[in-house]
Length: 71
Image 1 (cartoon, rainbow, N blue to C red):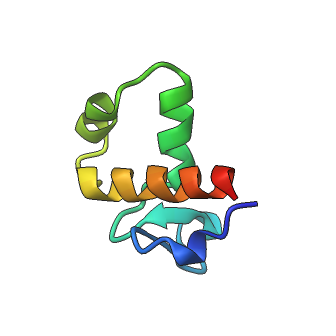
Image 2: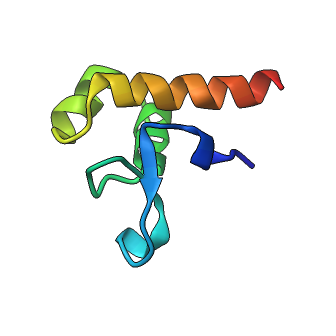
């Protein structure tokens, strides 16, 4: 399981979106990125669909997930 608390681009706020890990400052769950990418969406499409999320946040999340795979 990924330790999202080590990723500066995300936050978990009790009571906000059921306590899911969210892109910081948004109500967009991190899992939405992975679900959309798995369905064939591009990062640019994801950013257009979720305008509160920045490219830097997406890159940080993907980098964090990639590090966990290398460990």
